[in-house]
Image (cartoon, rainbow, N blue to C red; front, side, top):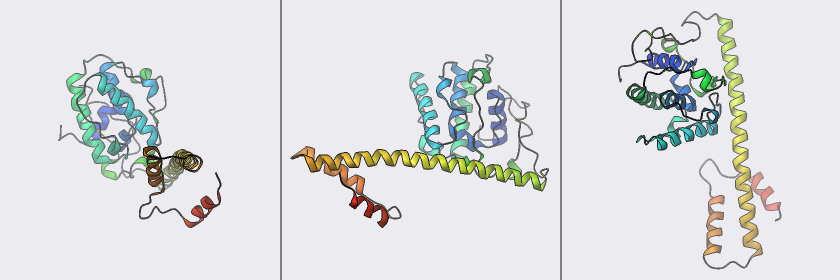
Length: 251
């Protein structure tokens, strides 16, 4: 399996799941891994899998579905979620190789309608989760068939390397910039969501410490929580302007 190229792996994945992936990194969204398992078992809750996930918290949710399947099927294989959701090529390549070996060993040869199983849900993953592809990995011209044999369908990919006109290259870059803006908006929304939760906890802890005569372990626990909330790291100190605003607040 180590000798199988990335293009061949993508060709197999695209044919099995009727996808249009062009990079191994796109597997880091978790959706494709879940559906490969569904092609084997047929009972993955695909309604819970977001095939066009664009933000890291959505990727994590997909992998949680996968973890539940591993647990239910007693599959003894750790899933390095924290690495995979970063959408780095090497981590996802190694995991995709394992998935392919597992599929080869367990797929029963039954027909599989991937589009019907995901109810036609969109599968477009963001281009910005991975670096721009170079001319050597711009498209697969040959791939593995469903049973791992050479000669499968070529995945639908972009123009062959060198064939894109300058204006097409500009349009592709503009599309990636739009995707990046959308991705950044999602990250900012996620940041604000978790910051609001931590702020609510901070207020509650401070109220409890100020309004109650707490003694013993309970008071110590609240102070430890407060200590964690106020801890900083190099490069992540609270700006003076924010600290000043906090000092003016009353509870």
